[in-house]
Amino acid sequence: MRAAVNTMRLLPLLAGALIVFVSAVAAPPEPDPRRALRDAERANTDQQAAHRDAVDRAARAAAEAMRLARERIEATARLRQAEAATAEAAARIDALALRRREAEQRVQTRAAALQPLLPLIQRLSLYPAETLLAVPAPPDEALRGVLVLQGLARQMEQETEALRRDQAELDAATAALQQEAPRLAEAEAGQKTEAEELDREIAAARNDQTAAEAAAALAASQAALTASRMESLRSALASIEAQRKADEVKAREQVQRAEKEQHAAEAAEARGREAVAAHPSGVGTIAVGAGPHGQLQPPVIGVVVRGWGEQTDGGPATGLSYHAPPGARVTSPCGGRVVFAEPFRSYGLLLIVDCGGGYHIVLAGFDRLDVRPGQNVLAGEPVGTMPNWDPGSTAKRPALYIELRRDGTPVNPAPWLRPAS
Image 1 (cartoon, one colour):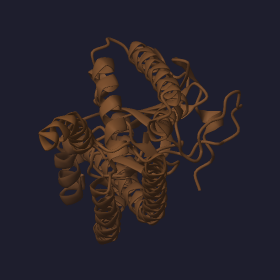
Image 2: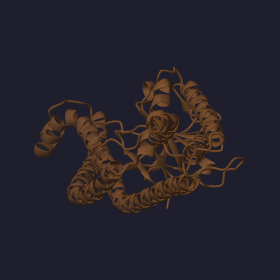
Image 3: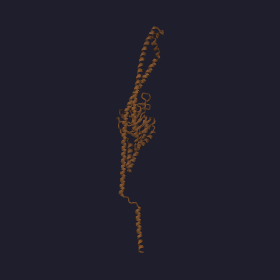
Image 4: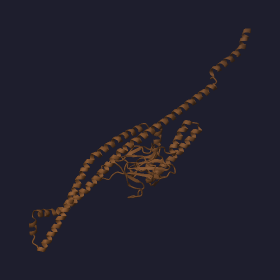
């Protein structure tokens, strides 16, 4: 009986102990503050290392892009020398072809003038006395006829001598053209070799584009697509500038939001986008408030054939026009960001580079473009090629057109361009 009573007394104690045990087993252990701190520190360290690694990769990519750009500029300089040789040979052939055409025209003119007199000249040379006696006339008129014939003979002799000289000039020009043709072919072959090497470097650079550049190119392409629908170049530039300002504001808002949320990597990326939108990158960019003192490079080897303000069918020219050797490579006059690179209205293939300071370079007359919107270019970096043409022909030669615009308004580019070396 006593044992049963003791057992009954122990039951509540055993039940309480069982409840405590079950609760201890079922409930999760209390978190260790020190372990949580170590995990947070480890995660923060990993995040910082990943960020540093991303920054290092971006810096290496930027340095590599800069190195490749400078290599393209050096390759373009070699190509420029080959183009200069082609330009000299083409100019000589053009001059010789003109000389030949002029000599040929003189020969044809003199031959046409002598053609009606040839039967008389032939008869006089064979039967001088009989020709005079065949026409009965008073002695004074016969004498006067003899004197006229003597003068006519001297004139025909002079015309014949001039005809011989013109024919000799024509033969000499033809021979010179034949001798010059191999030199032109050699110069064009050298230009082609250098151009192919440059094309390989451009293709390699395209294959090495980073994701950031691709994103920037996509945004710029969208802005260019909007600009391409505009009716005028001024409207297109205004659209591009409005898009740039919108991108800058959007990137600034992203920076502020990322900094507020303490996302360092996102903030750094957004600051990069803001910097790109606010200021085009690249050596040679025009500074705000800069004056013209030859800080732009000539875009092509060649000569200016139409200057600023010269009359055209559409009024005074608002830019310069260059004649260049066949297939000449065109380079960017300034460092900056490509904001437009596609066909536009009557301009054909049109390139616009934001040079900074509110200035844009506009180039037209391309056969091919080698850059895309969003791409950063250095001054002197190749951006496209001009069409081919046949030296010595009378066909109209292609021209490269260049405009410099400040806040959308054309300004004379001549003082900004340094003399061709």
